[in-house]
Amino acid sequence: MHARIRSIRPFSAAVTALGVAATLSACGNADDVSGATPAPSGVAVAGVQVMRDQALHEALPEAVKKSGTVRVATDVPYAPFEMFVKEGESRLTGLDYDLGQALGAKLGVKFAFTAQKFDGIIPAIQAGKYDVAMSAITDTKERQQVVDFVDYSQSGSGLLVADGNPAKIATLDDLCGHPVGVQSATNQADLLKAHQARCAELGKQSMDIQTFPKDSDAQLALRAGKVVADVLTKPAAGWTAKTAENGSAFDSVEDPAAQGGYKASPNGIAVSKKQPELTDAIHKALQQLIDDGTLTKICDKYGVASIAVKEATKNAGAQ
Image (cartoon, rainbow, N blue to C red; front, side, top):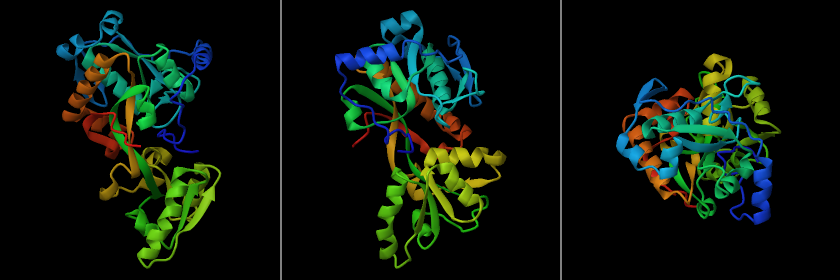
């Protein structure tokens, strides 16, 4: 399935001893791609100078304070959350990476990012290879059985339209009676199918749902005027609108009634259940970054300011 806000590519909550061994073997050669250095007293992230909070630093687990490092697993690339600065190089950028650097600066430690295949992330945390994971992971009840989440964004499906929004699409309801592009076999395709009943309730014609093997194909149809919108994840819509042809090709629709996107769910930093002090410290540090506007500025840097949460929560996923 498409759209890895990563509710559509779940990893299993149950891990056998054999599975852990296989995971450790598979990620034994994982590359440290952080390019980060130990956090100094202040670090500039998204134009904000983030300063160390000594009380939060003291609240960290002793092992983390001693090493000066939080070991972070991430699956690269997955724009706009984790990307390589340059193809073929190991340096990282992206929303999750920037947030990690801000949290590290606030806590006075290094957030060291290491590449790890997505399906192996939680088993590797359980096995003690990593302390946390920052990889656009959806907070779900199943995953809460084996890790704790500190939630920093809320995201679902979004609408990408041609530059200037010629069809004046403002909400999902406005798609009724129009041709709409979407990648096949995705949550977004299911969303559109389910919304056909809403079109009937409104007395409007059904959508002409046009499915494509890849979202890039749906974007080509949008460029050609064959569809009025492409429905994809909200973060992907924001990032594509911001970057395609330097922002001149598309717009991302901002529906005030669905700021994080349609059918939005919380995404969180996954933390080992063996380190509750680390969960609490990250939670408090994140709240500070929310209160001073840093989180929103980080999200806005990647075209997705609307997915930033207004309050840091723990294990908020309800499904």
